Image (cartoon, rainbow, N blue to C red; front, side):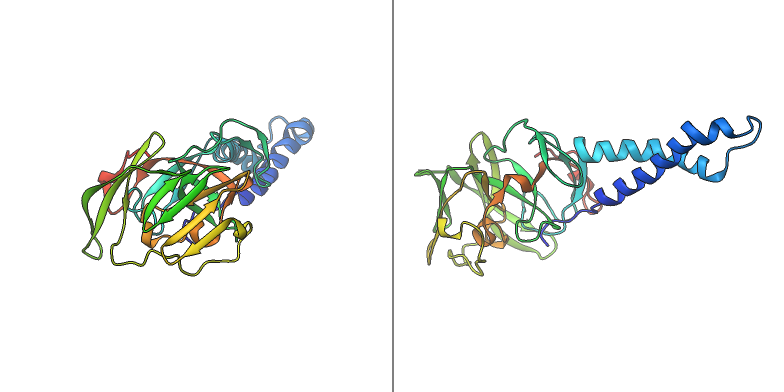
Length: 267
């Protein structure tokens, strides 16, 4: 699992139904039949106290913003293991909670944005990657250089990145995707070809060679890659992200226990 969160959607929904039912039962039935001087029973106090809290949390988490934690290094140097981030849930469309059905379009993911989505091969898992290919794009990643629709993406050397935990150095580059300029890591010693390719939907849209891969992104799908290019299992391995799997746009680091200087970073 590349990206994790405590998935509380179903649990919150069940709790919302229970506390809401208790609140409604008292509000519209039990209260009128109870002695005005008598204290409310425990189940009434419990429901009345928790229902509004659960309702606010459920609405915020389902439609506005949701917290996640980064458990791996596939998005280094942009996002680090241990980063707690916030994800905008409405920017890519309003979806019904629990069932994840889009009911209102807002905007489509744009090239270069960091997107959270449900892993196509196991939708119970949440992944996070950078949007590289949009529907209809031709993506070539040959000899570790990215080309989109025949145009090489601007990439310039930007020194080295020090991995604090393991104390080794990776070549760092600045890459520009659309209006988004960001850093990536490329390991010169790693082979350029893609390893452990899965049998994914629209696999026939891709060609793999010893120098890399080329893909045509199908309609309604996106091609995503990690910023830690040689240490990321992404669309190169398991395929495209369908629109219905999109969760939201990652935009803010709100905490990191190991590095408080990470707080407040925008992406």
